[in-house]
Amino acid sequence: MRVKYFAWVRERIGKAEETLEPPAEVRTVDDLIGWLAARGETYAHAFEKPKVIRAAIDHAHVKPDAMIAGAREIAFFPPMTGG
Amino acid sequence: MTVAATIRIQDADFDVAQEIAALTKGRTDIGAVVSFTGICRGSEKGEPIAALTLEHYPEMAEAEIRRHADEALSRWPLQGLAVIHRFGRIAPGENIVLVVTASPHRRAAFEAAEFLMDYLKTNAPFWKREEGVHGTGWIEASDHDDAAAARWTKS
Image (cartoon, rainbow over the protein chains, first blue to last red):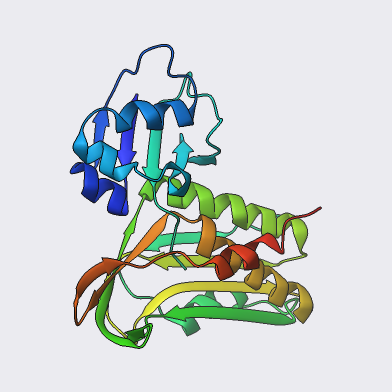
């Protein structure tokens, strides 16, 4: 799946997107955040406060317990400040 | 009549009068037009800023604004609706966002415009970075905006 990062999540990780194949036991958005946070220091920094992180699957907002099976694109970002 | 919302996400500025005219020109059935323009302030929390830079998630921004525009069209008797959101570097005094609603009577136009702005603030995937006197930093989301958006949730 394609994983995208925005704003300070992107800056902390140091990349805007990447293609990842998490293992089968990573089932929810929350699981994926935990798995990403264990990938290295930059990821741990980006996901140090998981409750602050917002997620979208295929361009729609989702909650942390959303299942990721079948997702083509998952994005992680801070709370939005547009408008 | 089916009303289609005009939605544009662009780096260029927009002309408010021109956007209103695009909705109302040649029509005699519209009784009310409300427009809201969000403008870049020259200070943030009392500190002067040189500019804002808006980052966005293009594919999702379009989809998310479309979902909320469609919800506004289903909740209020609107005759026209336009949402324009800019991205990129925006200097103080420049436009950031525009919502225009048209309806036979004012209440629907006011309410739909406010609903859309409240949702854009909290749900549209845009992030503001400020260039201040002490360097640059991401602007934090406000609880105030979350509360404003929550008012519109149907119980």
